[in-house]
Amino acid sequence: MLTERLILTGDETQDKPLIQQAAAIIRAGGLVAFPTETVYGLGADALDSAAVRRIFLAKGRPAWDPLIVHVAAPEDIHRYTHDHSILTAKLIQAFMPGPLTLVLPKRECISDVVTAGRDTVAIRIPQHPVARALIRYSGTPIAAPSANKFGRPSPTTADHVLQDLSGEIEAVLDGGATPMGVESTILDMTTEPPTLLRPGGVSREAIEAIVGEVRVLGRSFEEGESLPAPGLSARHYAPSARMLLCAPQPEVFYGALKDALSRYAFVGAMRPDGWRLPDSNRLRVFEWGAWGDWATLAQRLYLGLRALDGQGVHAIVCPLPPEEGLAGAIRDRLQRAASE
Ligand code: AMP
Ligand code: MG
Image 1 (cartoon, rainbow, N blue to C red):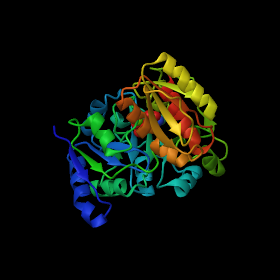
Image 2 (cartoon, rainbow, N blue to C red):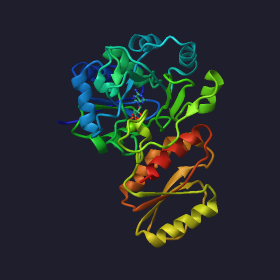
Image 3 (spheres, rainbow, N blue to C red):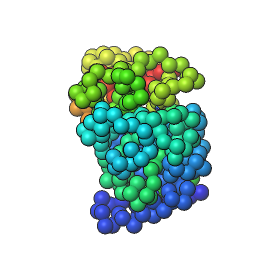
């Protein structure tokens, strides 16, 4: 199959026929990758089990790892879930559309293939205008995990999508680089108190301001165990190179690079602006952004991991951000990428 790249301009009238073409593919049971404000998603009609099964095949994703359902409006959340709690309503009001996914009790019409047999569904309303238009024109909820091969860094550009999935999906809507660069926050509303399953664009602090204290899932899950959020399983979001995380100080970073160069033939550096580098022709550098500018560092995280991987480095040295806010989401993805 030839994967069509539908290049968008950002102009609504010009882009409309292309997004409608993509919507027609979704309605016909096909697969379309599309930009959201977090990362590129790989979409199929969430009410069509056969179409959803193709997502798992294309990604090489195990059937036990459930997908997020993307809808256009709050009414749709009520249409596909059973939840009438005040807390859920408040969260929808505060953060949707946006990078927050809620896990809620599902209704019958949502395919078991989407939820990996669970009686809950993960659902969100994306903010990206292309994602919103695609859902509206499709006239159906869209099940979409990140548009990468399972376990690889998520795609933040259409090029990344094509690197992983060219020939396996009908089309990619190319809307440029995604603005946030890390996946949505996932909050399980079926527990008391709610459980933060994955940190992301909406911070724990912002959520707690609305629902009170949340439980944070410890990292005690083993592969194969039934996971509340399989993105939490050991190695995930990972480049092929070995990830070497270091404390976020320029001199520690420098020392970690020296050490890596003594052990590996080619070494990559996720370099914060201005941090000193050892002199070596075996070093490959990704200029990441200013340390502390978490929005930029999140947006460029997967771009950097993929770029260094593409240069064939054996190890990537990267400073580890702190736990709070968006920095915490970057930290979480790096720790998973580094786990064996
Ligand atoms: P991705 O969009 O590729 O990041 O994958 C979606 C993630 O959503 C999965 O890794 C799961 O962790 C999570 N997820 C989807 N459905 C559920 C559910 N019913 N309960 C808990 N987590 C879910
Ligand atoms: Mg993913």
